[in-house]
Image (cartoon, rainbow, N blue to C red; front, side, top):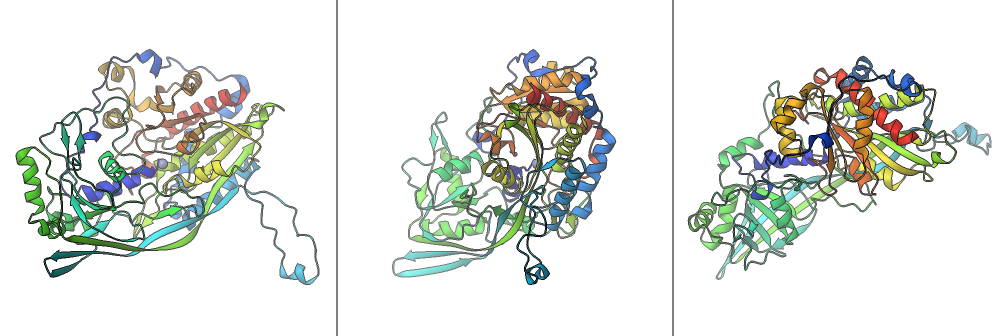
Length: 599
Ligand SMILES: [Zn+2]
């Protein structure tokens, strides 16, 4: 997964977690919401797998653990340098996938091959291009990368006739996690914990107008309000924007910018966290890799966290701003905590100026696309798209983020299915499009471009099968994480019924019935499955390319393996991948794809 949200999530977590941070009240999650669930509807167990039907067996048998690991070893090798969208490493991966599509004789449905004249042809008066027009496996589009080149934050305090100006220093006094390219000057309002909780009868915004102002908010939650367990099906703790629900709710009130201060963290600790790590231990913690923001120019899809700017400030900076109100950050917080009541206020006489300048540069966006046309004259106008993102987060200094599980493994899933359908003598009635997306990690850009610019415009897409992370087997720890964040049951009854190493979570959109296709296909595979119908709007922890299809109301299904501490770290390497699991999930998806394409 990208997890589009995850990268941002980690970036945010890094900034916020410099010191102890209490989770925002609205984001508390619990795995103990196990209302006695009827597991016969959601749990799939197979006593003994059957042999697949004869007419799909040839393809089924091409899928194996060793060949899966073989392909993964190249895709996740250091040579490809983490396959970041727009880089040479990504292009090598795209060349590799396209060459395999060609080897298996898939129909190319990408851009036309260039047909430019050579100078010699031009000189000799040639009027027709040298080669016949032919399609390629690449669907290309421009990516625009935006970098912050400089920023400024300055305070002006008017006290009677005196005017005090102060410039803050980037990296020490403040750090920006979103740059807007704007210059703005606005008054400052302190809003305490930034919390409005009806049940607790607590509202930091009562009688306070934040619209058009720069809001200073504490990153933590009040200790005197108990955190309620999150109800089942509630929005995830971190959403698409990568902001916490508290920040999102605050952004909706229309502030000019948000300054976040962490009163529990010592500035000393915060500064230390800003220094580059000297060495990275084996099971590496988090390396702070600068996030490269990308978008598709002209696509008019603003990045969701673009505005308002969210800026982390040191306690020293907060004190300098609040001094005009005769407060310190600590004192302002203590007043709330002692009275257990909100104490928000406009900071008198101050104007804060925040400015950033951006630089943009263009990069190549490449989706790899191939097709097997349906065998039924009527039904071949309907298509099932099978996709995975091929990109990952690249490299940083000497560190390579190989992205073996995320999403080398899913890319191999698409390759496994392309080879299997190509090898099977019988072809399904409907058309299949095999796709490897770029720039998922930059905000699902490749799949978003594809659904808006379908390379075969006459086809109606009837379902999307997403591969994103399928090589890490579950254990006690990752099951507990899945229970906390993705609604997987944690009841003793459930845990007793499954074998963790043989377990797979199957996400699909509610109402599509695709879970039943997974149950059906599992007869030939024998994985322990949990069928999770995700409600629209609360898809799952983080996000993936199924969102691009979900937006068009196209049914989707996404198997999801264990989330480990290696996610988005340099330690997400091929040696940790389970070839057996990749084989089983690929075979399961092959069976599901047959159900969807041939029924
Ligand atoms: Zn991913």
